Length: 380
Ligand SMILES: Cc1ncc(COP(=O)(O)O)c(C=O)c1O
Image (cartoon, rainbow, N blue to C red; front, side):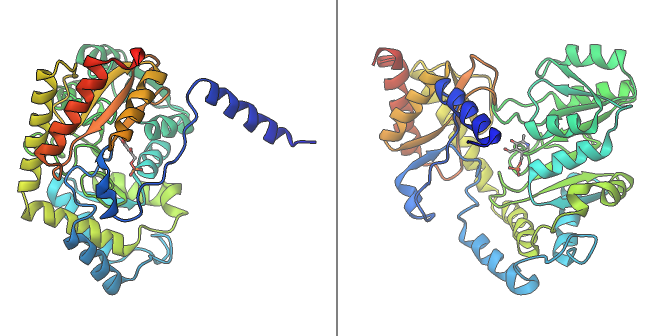
């Protein structure tokens, strides 16, 4: 007789399959060089650092200097000079007093919410914040209220009813690519004696003049797996908040610390971004080119000015069909369905990076035009 758990899994997967929602992994070509045979517009390596030879060398040097693994949790003996140097650099860049490192952004967000809040707290979050934030708040038992996406009036109404609370936003929204009204949110929070937490996963490293700092955010989460091209994350805040989290965050206390080689790597990635400002310039040129060509081709874009350029298709099946047609032509783009995005707003998530050539962007837009304008996918 099948175990009840097996029955449950079987039924759930059958339902997901029937609704076009069964997520599966697809192995990409093995090496960074082979992967170039696919033109990839799906990842978050916005500055092209994941394959930078300078950083491959930095990882090697970090491993030689500090070891490949941290060997223990941070409070035992897994916290080394490589970690403190990275924390200090992150504080120098953002202006926060202190920081602590995690192996992933998911873990950092989850730990922050779960440790900071309890059943007596009220937390107000943008409707579209990341799953790791929602899960952490739910785990904490805090009261969660949502304001309309990027809607300052909606946030103001909730803050007026619940002063002395905490507001949470992303800087650049992961699935929409639009930016939060950071200065307005920050002012609003101050008016209502509330704290502002910013998940800066998709802004950190690529935003120049609009970058998030201590001037906006009381607590800022940055990740290393997007613009920095590597792995890991940090929470940045006041010394008191970080001391509290170090002493109480279970994800931090009961987990092997980020490897020192990886901390050294993230440190080196930050240094490389400073040494090579052209990467950000090139990224912004590529975003502008994509938007200009797409508009000229009649493709409907959103307001996003960032590397994340969604094209809303609507239903799951058509979205998958367009992504698969693009894949056959050699272009990889993200196909994002509910529950990651609201029902009926399934989309292609196209991400630009500094290494895309102008020819590759022209080719992608030409293919998109064929699939979305000339022969819309439903009629094929
Ligand atoms: C907005 C946002 N926050 C946090 C995370 C988690 O970061 P990581 O990939 O480092 O776990 C992601 C990942 O996609 C994200 O998009």
